[in-house]
Length: 406
Image (tube, rainbow, N blue to C red; front, side, top):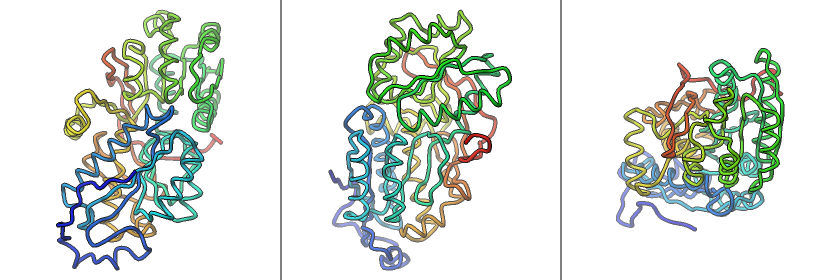
């Protein structure tokens, strides 16, 4: 699937004298006098499509806006889109095609850590650059990846501290889909709960395959253990069955609150709630860095533009916003480097900032390719949106390798 975005045969590069192609592209990337081609690699089919479609749309919006402003170094961006199909070997195959056959300038893509881990050796071997949008477990920093989502210290640890300090949670039941991100995230969560939260313990830990839809036995275990905090990292289409079955079993935010319990998730955003139905999740909590309801001018413009392009009923979750950051950060980095070459981009990435970010402001860390970001707690509403009830006072420095959590 390939599609041109905004380029035309009549277009002439107004800055070609300043940025001639043989100077800005010395490594054979798909860059001409008038265009630069990038790759998009997400799941638009399979169980992860419910989550990744928003990322595709956000990246397309950013690329359209950049093209409307004149492109990057005077070149309009064209896109080759590939479908990872919620299958990790397919992600690897498509990544190799984009880098080796298509020679794209960069790739915006992946969602699950399993898909990122599948493509990472290819990006490092072929020296490509991936802008990865999803919050994840950390414990990784590659010169070939810019991580525009949160790592563990910016989401998992901050959220658990909030549950303990503000809601008095002392017992936690850890739940996840069965792959690397939920398992590693819950490993970090367990260490934090048992080593760093005084008087706290984990009373249960369960995993289910991606696409799983039968949660009756899990719900019975949760009822039996009566944890103060149900900590959920269910992903993709399984979210729909998980929350609907919780509701059918009488486990709602109101019923939990009567017993001093909460449900806190780091995997359910506005994108998933669109499929779940707001009435099934009302009153539960999520720890994210972005919610569609954020009240700032950057976000108001972003939400309006997104809905104009993708429809008034569309919604924007945390990862969708982080995906929107990717093309803008790549543009700023290419312009800082004066080159599309991957080594030049990699060297120039540290300190690149995006002041118009819908989440407020972001900056790439000087050394680890992650973003400085805030953390926030949102309370789910019946209309599928979130009420923001807590926010870190400052940007949190990314630390993908925190001491004491290995």
